[in-house]
Length: 338
Figure 1 (cartoon, rainbow, N blue to C red):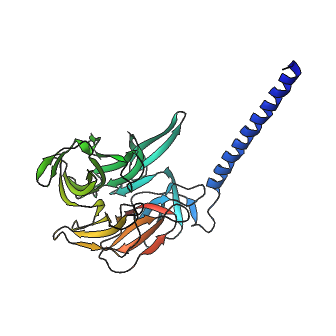
Figure 2 (figure 1 turned 30 degrees about the horizontal axis):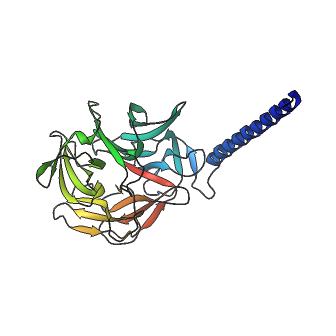
Figure 3 (figure 1 turned 180 degrees about the vertical axis):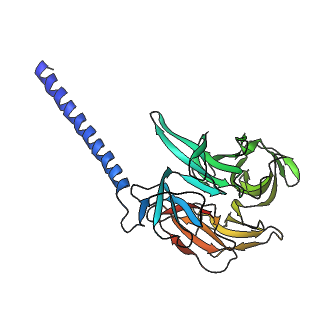
């Protein structure tokens, strides 16, 4: 190749690379613009003060496209579809009780993504940050605010298939003592000590400051377990229970249950379990719900279902009557104050 030809080739290569770089910048700018562009017909959102105290409000992760996407927003509990007040706190999972919150969040760094569990005070200020080695999945705060739990995926990213692994942690906000994994607890299964390398836990719901319910999975089966924090034990209660959520009076659990014959990608239905009689009641929601419900009072549960902009919040009575009702668009992970 002649010197002139080499120069021409070099100039062409530089021009091509420049075009690719320019196109990449435009694509990135378009994505940023899309994120910051308000969602057509979406809810009204404005910045303001959001706290975990005060009157009766619902706080949740805002899923509406625009500058406040993934931020925590507050609405009056009596008007969940109303105008939203946004706080500059972004979460992938959120829950709160007794003026204590937990925010599972993503941080983009020079070497890639990392995730943290942030324990928040009543003003949404971070009290402690805990690195979490996986993609956020579930989060819960005890009714007292003294205990916080979270679950992350450390392999795979869905409960629907069998190829996943989880890690569930609990921290005591009074002492900051951390149990990094419930797999450290002793397991009593069917009345006998049990050990297996494939054990996974997820979906903690607290009964009080000493006990909780959760899901245990092993050998292709899931179980409802009751945990004793002081004894560091979990005991199986019944099979085929995932993501339980305890009622405010502690007498019932609503959970998702795999139903034979449904699609492997959408296998669940919501059921209520009476803890005294162990009787199950199917709820009126007939769609597959991959969420851990939140109780909105004594008789109703809230949960997320796919929507046009990520997820919408729905409600259904917890006794099997009634019908599902959409209560808020572009919303996820609700918690109540007051």
